[in-house]
Image 1 (cartoon, helix red, strand yellow):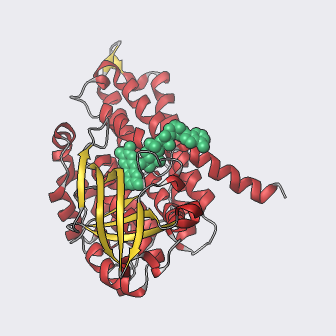
Image 2 (tube, helix red, strand yellow; image 1 turned 135 degrees about the horizontal axis):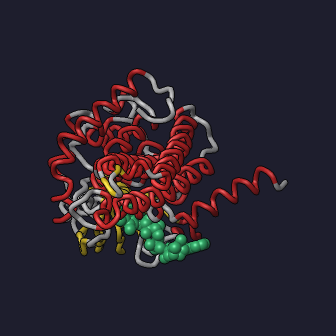
Image 3 (cartoon, protein in one colour; image 1 turned 90 degrees about the vertical axis):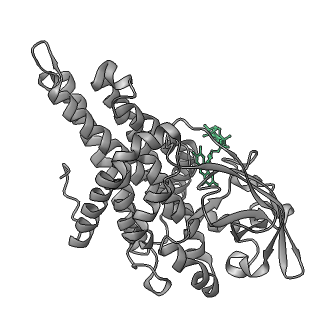
Length: 387
Ligand SMILES: Cc1cc2nc3c(=O)[nH]c(=O)nc-3n(C[C@H](O)[C@H](O)[C@H](O)COP(=O)(O)OP(=O)(O)OC[C@H]3O[C@@H](n4cnc5c(N)ncnc54)[C@H](O)[C@@H]3O)c2cc1C
């Protein structure tokens, strides 16, 4: 199907086909409406749940299918090929789930993972604040122990699934003096007293996903919900979570780029100028060739990184950052070229490629901007080669 055969297992090929069918039949018909109205795809989340797609990556003992990150990347890629916004809502639940899986106690995993795996509950991850973006250690939300509860106060913003999720992994300072080491993670349930949802953002792209503000006003969180039952895990849990989730953002970028390439190739074949399809012009052929090659290079990086995670390799931060950096830049380049191939029509909402371009941009920004990814990659290189 692609230029490169990625040596997927039969199960992974079947998974790709299943998600492609769902995306084509159950997502595509509603895509432009969700984009226009900025609608959260609640019904589509249920459809994905019915096909067990929220159970990927979660071990069987917690109600999951016990598959690896590679499967999640394939699913995310296929959803993104049709709608990057739906993919963001889907992937953000895994972003909220990973800290529990990686750092939760046995009790916390047993309590929260089965309902996330079944899709009955949607998860979200809340780190970012108005004054703590790239500088994740600057969070101002506080959590103070009082009796057998922590009292949370503060505001998170730009949170995917904010307001629509049921379970939130929230990063808060338990000891401000200790900076990054004084940050802890908490599992907070929707409906907790004092936990409210503020502004919903209006966005350029991924408009089928919700991006909201979380307001904590003396929210009482049981001490049992301190992640890992240990203060100070917040920053490391965040970094280790990103190591696993960034290949997913990269897969989102690959899927968006793939969707744009397929649309542009079909269009170019049909569009007649100078009495011939524009695919007969070398200028267009070479653009398509560059787009296809870049996408395959990005896909290779995504799958290799996912495979590193699935093989249990410890040091995956550099590869995850590289996959996200490269794939998201490819997505932006490819979708911009797709608009170019459509000419003036590409600029119009009636055609699909301007949406791909708008959806692609976020992959260069969230889960750490690409400038931050470069810092991580450089640090990894310096550690390896500059001894
Ligand atoms: C649609 C959307 C969904 C999101 N979903 C979530 C979510 O679910 N959970 C969550 O916690 N967060 C989420 N975020 C937040 C996202 O991760 C942050 O927006 C991102 O990390 C950047 O932070 P910032 O917006 O504060 O930008 P800033 O940190 O203010 O950065 C501004 C610019 O400065 C650059 N910059 C900053 N520091 C450096 C540096 N050291 N070196 C070089 N350049 C630098 C940045 O690259 C950027 O270009 C989401 C954001 C968006 C837009």
